[in-house]
Image 1 (cartoon, one colour):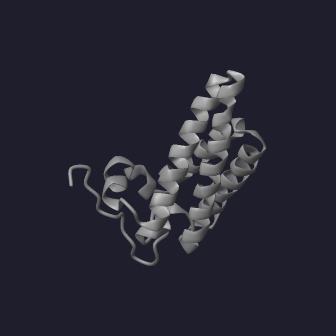
Image 2: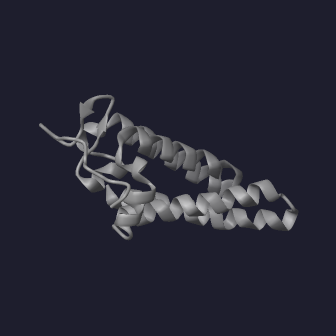
Amino acid sequence: QRSTMFANGALLIAAGFFGLFNVLTLHLPATILSAYVILFGLLMCGFATGLGQDRIRKFFGFLHSGHGQLVFLLVAGNLSWTAGTLGIVAAVATNAHGVYAWRRGGEKAGLAAAEGGFRAGGVGYGGVGSEWPEYSVNS
């Protein structure tokens, strides 16, 4: 699961990088969106590898909930449509990853699996008796 997250993040980074070449055609909105795609890809790779977990937890706490990660994946995927052919592949893969994580949450699929489970829609996905992880913005 972590390898899938990392591969998806790397695909977003690659799509965003090649999308930056839109600046040569003076297509500035696509260039700016490509920069965001790179940032979202870096965030996914960091989450998957465990790098910077304290900062991710502090500034991107929504990734630790089922609904938050679903929205993140859908936004990241849909931003990459503008990054050319590789962006389309990344968009399809990221949206599929989001839907898969949402549909297969019982097996702790998705970004929050790295933290030992999550809750979405009032249903515990971290196993029997799982609770919301305790995270503090100020810690």
